[in-house]
Image 1: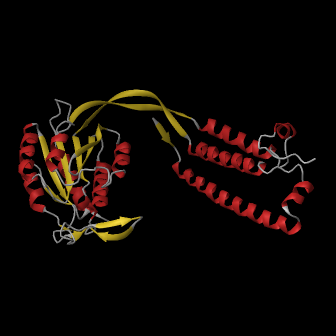
Image 2: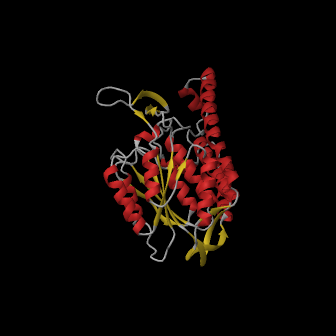
Image 3: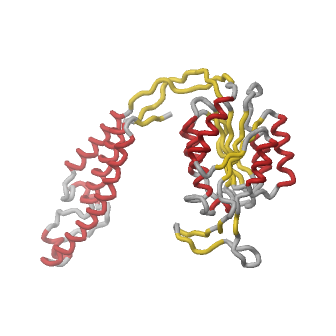
Length: 348
């Protein structure tokens, strides 16, 4: 496992593209200036030992030096010792709807981004609970198994989008059925499933059956509604620009609406609660109170207890590249010139 001490220094890497752009403009300016005094063939005769490639090589060394020095300042640390620690918590699975209807913008910035923010804020409130993530549309897909690594959970969460599943539709029953396989600890008494959705369900006939089976296995199901009952069209975008609105087979613009009734029924049958997700802070507070009321199960988890600094390696390599940049001259190297690596014509 790798940790970074001072992530703020990563911003220094932004210097690299700026230097590259300045270097390109400098080369263009130099060529234009040289043409004012002599043409290319004459200039080569005037400066026979000038290398065409050393300036680029020096730039590469300089940029590598900056990159490695920046990583050295960030100070990456590698975990060297694993310890088993005891924790108390609840097993929580988040099932996030990634169907196309989640692109509707009746709740800013859109339903899916709102869902991801809700889950992220809930994770921020957790201390030692284990979490898992499921993505579902026309089918359910395991995004992240039960883990205590909240950083990994947020990373997988942010990568979720409406194109990750080819099968469209909204099959809540499949998400519930998949969630039941996540709780592999037979002694875990508190199992919680959060379904974050706009309530559109194309499997209504079997959803409550899936809920019933989940309840039999000790799973409590909470639903979080995102969207507005009055609904909104589904924008079709390219490069962030709306090109059109999704239409049905008759050519009519599709209006997708928050179906609270479906989500309320699922929560009632699942011994949970329906939560309005339009207010992030309010929803998170309700969920926090619900989780605090639950009994915690003690379990063991492994985590790194000791980390070793690695900054010295990166600082050393960075300084080496900067020294190479200083000692590499713009003129041709005699032994490289004899090898003629770049097939340069030797003037008689």
